[in-house]
Every structure is written in C-alpha cells, then in structure tokens.
Image 1 (spheres, rainbow, N blue to C red):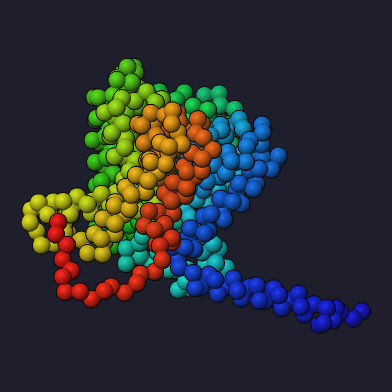
Image 2 (cartoon, rainbow, N blue to C red):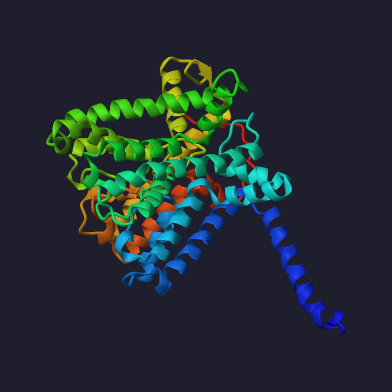
Length: 459
C-alpha cells in the first residue's frame, strides 16, 4: 500500500516545523525574568481551567474563586476564598496539590530535571533561567543543584507523609493517608493549604503533628542552598557550610527564638492557653509567619495589635533564597542590617558577620526593599478603596500576607470584593515570582545615561 504523498502531509509538517522554530526563538530571545513570569501565569491559567471542571467541584465554585485558588496554589500562598476540603472533589484537591508542588520548587525545576534525566545535557539557556529562579552562589553547579532539589523534595515529602499518616489516623481524620500526603506537600512547599476548615487549630495541643509540620516547613523555607551545603559538608566535599548558609541559619534561628519569646510573653490569646500548649502555640505562629507556610493553631484575628507588628516583620522578610518560601528573604534583611551598621560605624565597606558584602548584592537588597514597599503602598491604597468596610490592620495584614506568599489572614479573604480578589491575585503572583524578578519582567530595558557634570545627589 502506498504511503501518504509528500504533497498531502507537506503543508501540515511545514506548519509544525515553523511553529516549533518560532517557539524555540521565543524562548531563546525572551528575558529569563519574563519567561519565569509568563510560565507561572500559564500554569495558573491551566490550573484554573481544571478547577472550573464540574469533575473538580464538590459544590459549585465561582470562576473567580477558582482563579484565586489556582493562583494561591501556584504561588504557594494559602489564602483561600472557599474551603478546599469541602468545595473540591479528590480530583480538584489533586489539581491543587499538583499546582502547589509545581509552584513550590519551580516549574522550570521539573522541566530541567526531565531534560537532565533523559539527555544529561545542560544548556546555557536553562542555566540562565535556573539562576533567575534560584539565586545561587557562584560556586554552585546548577545541574547538580536541580537534581538534588527534586530528590530531596520527594524524599522529605514522603517521610513527612509517613509520619503524619498514623497520627492523623489516631486522631480520627477522615482519609488519613490522603490528608497526610496533602499536608506534607503543602507544608514542605510552604503553601499553607489545608483540608481542615480551621487549619491546625484542632491540633494545637498535638505535639507530634505540630513538630512534623514545623520541621517540614523549616526544611522548605531555609532553602536548598543550605540543604546542599549541609549535605556536601557531611560528605566531606567542603570544609564549611559557606557564608550564605551561615547567614540563613543565623537569621532563621533569631526569628524563631526572639519571635517565640515575644508571642509567649506579650500575646493575651496565647497566654490564655493551657501551660503545655502555650509555648507550642507561640513557636508555631512564629514558624508559620517566618517560613511563610501560613498554617495556624490559634485564630489570627484574635492577635493583639502589638503582636501583629511582630507578625508583619516576620511575614515581610519571610523565608530564605532558593527555597519554597516567600518574602524579601532572610539574606535581604542581613544585607540591610549590614548597611545600617556600616553607615553608623562609618565603615568604607558593607559588612555582615565580619564578611564584606559585594556591592551588587547590597544594591539588590536595597532595591528589593524599596520596590517591595512601593508595591505594598500601591496595593494598600487600592485595597482600601475596594474594601471600604474593612479595618486598616486587616487590609494591611492581607496585603503583606499575599505579597509575602504567607497565607495567613485575619478573616478578610472570604469577604473580599471581586476587584479585591483580583488585586490579591496579582499580589500573590508578584510574591511568587519575586519582587525584583517581577520588576525586571515588566520594566523596559534601560536607556543610556545623560552625560552631565553635576551628578551627585545630596542625602
């Protein structure tokens, strides 16, 4: 039998070849920041389409709420306008979990891992995008880093699910195995999505569940830079953890100790708990804000004004670079502290922990800090116009939580107007991509500077 003629398949083949060539040119010529932003937008829209299917919904969910949930999952924020446990079927919950996993370690990570597994080739393009997604030290091999990220993620999430399963079963949780898998992935990816309508408030006195969730969240939030450095140190491949890892561990520890002490002493809602639960509740709320995981064991709306300020600081700076958490990152805070101390001590260079910081890193930290507050100010202005009946602290908490991909709320999320939901969706997307990366993606290329003699700015 004669095969199909060249004439019959030629035009179709040519169109596919042209489309494939155009796609390759697009990816090669597109800036890494724009590529990351567009990738997360596409994954969000794909998740939205799947959640809109009747198969995914246990009860009718509005399209805008599905978009909100999809964005919250991809950005690993955890803010929800509907209850995921009762509003979505197991299929819908599986879609949410897939979006969380993809958003937690980055969609480019999975693609790069597949490429490495199949061809063992690593292109310059993938290295550029990987370094845009993960701010890595210069001595880190991106290809080896990608493999470790995926392997470590799967191992830790499996161990977390194995630990949670018997505890959930003993506590009478329905579908304990599925809940264990869902919450293990959600915790490690610092997503804060829960199948329980009140998060972990019913388990505030359960030491095992609290500690496992906290361990998973910290492992995700401290970042893969630290985990890689610890692994190499244990294997004898390096003599020390490295400066970045030491800074991350130092700042994370200070957040945990100082924050827990403040909440333990100054928060009336926590002081009213039984003695055996008080320390655990204080620690958990500090952990959930600083790692940006977004779970809670006490009602957030009941926290006092003074403690809200503490929570603001923890949520703003958040987790660490190259991890699953959000926020400005602990290393940004370290760089800003270095700037303040060096200026006050009249040093000619910026130092932190007796190490001189590069000018480029200091500029990035200061730009991130300034750009963050410009976006936050604009978001507060817009949200206060759309949510006229909400108190200022509730709106501020919501905006900071969304921009830091934290997921904690004082109860405003479910009451947002349609326009308010869209604004929060935008904030969550910006927070997931990263403040500076978002700026690089939307700002046009620089123009040449004017040559003038007087170019000093008085401060």
